[in-house]
Length: 265
Length: 234
Image (tube, each protein chain N blue to C red):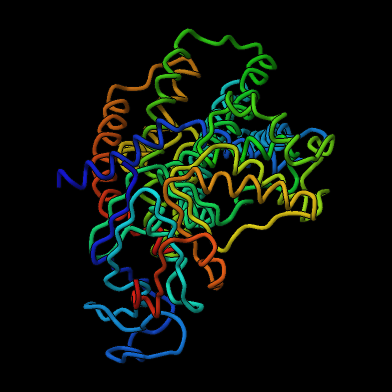
């Protein structure tokens, strides 16, 4: 057990130490995607903006919520959700798409997951620009609580890292899992309050859809402070426990199967 | 001290897309490739290397001979750390540089400069150090202003020139090669060969997989022959 932990941790640590490589590869992915387009990565911002506008119009009216309240909520939620789903679905393929590199040079394998993470954080930064614009449009202030969203974001990323790594290993061996994951994530999108606000739920349903939904807590610790309230200590607790337990399991699992990844490709 | 020690190293590749049952308990003896069989869980496996013992120390220039599928590339990959041995023990002391796929990770849409950083990062070079070496690389590759153009505008020869110039930037301790490298047109070839000979000479261990006995004769002081994953002569 101890040996597995050390072997898993050693690779992860080496990858973190060589973060520069993951950064260069991740940036390269983005450059590659938007090369020769005049607006470049700002297409990310634009398409997200259009999506938020359209969804806001439909669901704001549908739920009969004032736009001033609904649109900031939707903006942050949708941007965070995009970050979560792309990291998890791309994490599934993190090792498979890096096959050429993995089979040729011996690098810490977690680097390939960090590359996915970094790439999506850069995209997130492009997207989050929309939020201050929304605040400006409705002439809403950015509350001081927003500071806590930075902490929440770090905790969210720590959680996403282990999820992506665990999924990456599993999906390299079992190639059906990416389909299952993307399907489940689609379902979770509707189960998690992103396009609907939690207070619209009847009391009984909220226990199941909010308290028992880890995605709700992960989003809440970043979203709530940005919207001017503090997330409940229960949400913080869930996210911290999730990170600790998740990382312990993942490091052990990774320590056990890391050396098999090259063989599975 | 640089050294490589392999003791009874075996490597199995699990095959997941053939039906395990039809081949189960059936040992196929094909003319090429490793031995197919099944492991204790009944999964089809190809044994690519079997009980390899090898001891290399400073100054060794090892030529690895063998027909297609004999396990030469697998052996190189095991030494480079890509595949961890299934059985046996491997110890490598010294930094390994693989000269097998020189253009790995290069991107056609990116400029020459960007590719230097990309390729350099994969080789483990620090960014700052790399930027101090750019003019050195460009000069050696003889690319001039083309270095600011996307890689896809390069001819194959020019791409190889760039890749070679980056890969030979530092003196490696242990060099892995798949056949002797030849790059570029007549002029560059000579320059490249000179540099390659130089770094091979200064390296402490060279392992080269090849089909050419003449090459082995010329650069190696030790030879092994692989046959279907077995080491048949040392």
